[in-house]
Length: 231
Image (cartoon, rainbow, N blue to C red; front, side, top):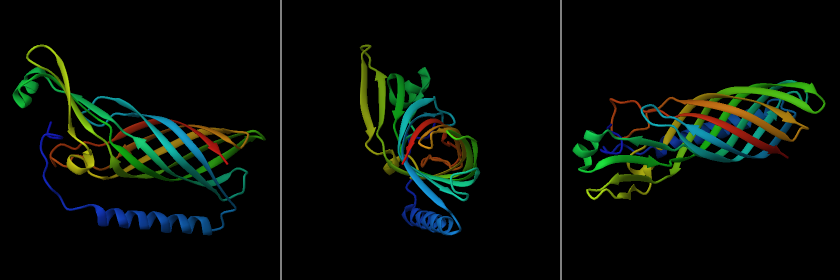
């Protein structure tokens, strides 16, 4: 596994990120000015289950704001679903016995990281009015992820059989992971009393997030459960 063992400097993603953010803002302005009759926002919390390719599954969190643009008032109709979510997409990897010794000179090496992104979902969808107090919704589209912070740690077994831990990098986006991520996914759920939303969502990353290799493609894959309180 090349990731976290080598680092080859690349050009900064700063200019790309600026273009992405500008495009997002323009897209939101167009949507909100094109006949939309209602805009709502709410606080969102949830749990992520991240399983990047080649890595073990790891649980994390998401918290932030969600917004909804309705094109038919509060009745059944098209919607635009967006958000600003702080999202922990952790991962872990366990080396084989020989790989641990050959690479680090110690036994039972395990790597763990908590890369945290600012996720910006931009989904188009539809809402169904089932009853005066119950609505169903579904949406799909891209999610832009901007890497913010996250440490990477290694645990291993020393010669004396003791378990040890040390930090490899303070911020994985400075050394080992690409800061910009793009994914495609969906979100489905139900809303009670026009206030409480329960949802499930899934995203498949499109970009290789490993800075150290172009041969092995490592992409985020996350499943989330969410609770949103709309204002």
